[in-house]
Image (cartoon, rainbow, N blue to C red; front, side, top):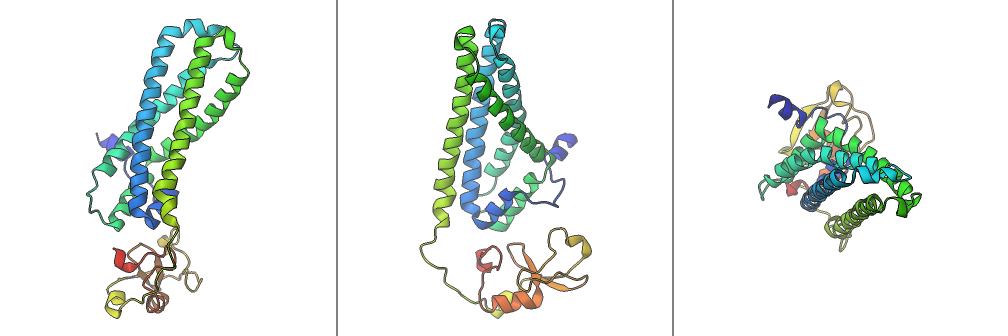
Length: 264
């Protein structure tokens, strides 16, 4: 149990997954999109695995006459899909367990946790290999004789077709959940933060081990120096305290992610 927990827990916070930035900019829409993609991806992969294993059980021998090794393509493709199922189901379970009123900062932390885990990184590497294997399957199907192995040919085409359908569905879901919300109705109203709001924000001293994630102030574009006083905004971004205070006196939005400090 301890090994399983470690596998799905944070291992390295040095490099943020692009998914974290999406959640940082549009927390509610991003959470909805991730949940839909994980649920549809998990169900789709499970269905593909079941049908592939059933097909291979009954038609393994009769598929040996194919000009291309389509049965081996189906075998490895189903295996790759099956390897990703545990990570998808665990991640989906963790996101579904988040409270409805979960704060944006807490949501971002949760996404950072599982995207920094060994399980997530291995799943991404498997996905990358799957894409390459998928392209190879298309090439084999296009260059194989349909008459020599109709069953394997049809099954491979069906698997490739469902993958294309899932990709189209993912793009449509992205447009509905995220892109539609990125078009602002008008320029955001600029409001200055109140003094008590600014002084309530966290202040900390810069340390050298923080340089991997936070090395330069985005306001003055100067690198941080050991011991310099920084101010952390609720979104997690750091700036020189003086730079942050002067900025917030003009606008209550973060200079990087444009989120208001009042949204948290």
